[in-house]
Image (cartoon, rainbow, N blue to C red; front, side, top):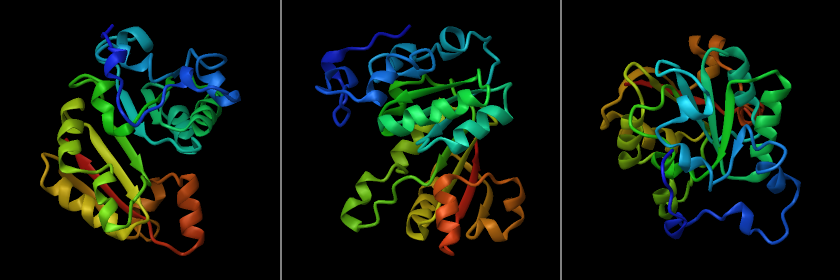
Length: 234
């Protein structure tokens, strides 16, 4: 397994074991759900060996990634609908993290794992060519201009994602924010990714039939907001 120096622990990420009064969800990360859930201390140790050490599979086994699982409805759906593929979720907040893996396990999932980590530091978790498909659904849009630097989709970030993925993989991106969508399209188009599908109103397009509505997506659709969708290929 990869080595990980705690002296250089990433800024902006608190350590679960240092929380003075941990609640159920904090304790569950390294307790009840420790086989399926990986803390910010444990997860980087598996960089480069998720197939072998975590999923106990051969080199051809596909591993997909959901960045920001939220409450875990898509995470559970995806793990159940594609049992022949590994699925790793990244979530920073304790409660939705545990909710996500618990939902997957209740559906009988054996192919899903979840990690507590900062999504912008994804290359601390995975080696080049270790991932297959990546799902990014409704990330924080950081609407105010002075906050745009905090947006997940940045040119440099896409370059790193591209290296982590295997050939013929894809990135699926959804958001209700038109401004963030246009921002992201501009950066994807300047990246090595190739555009495969695009819709400014997903639920009024032919792509809707194969779409799984996330928790946030249902809220936005009920409010009459269009969902913007894009698929990019490596």
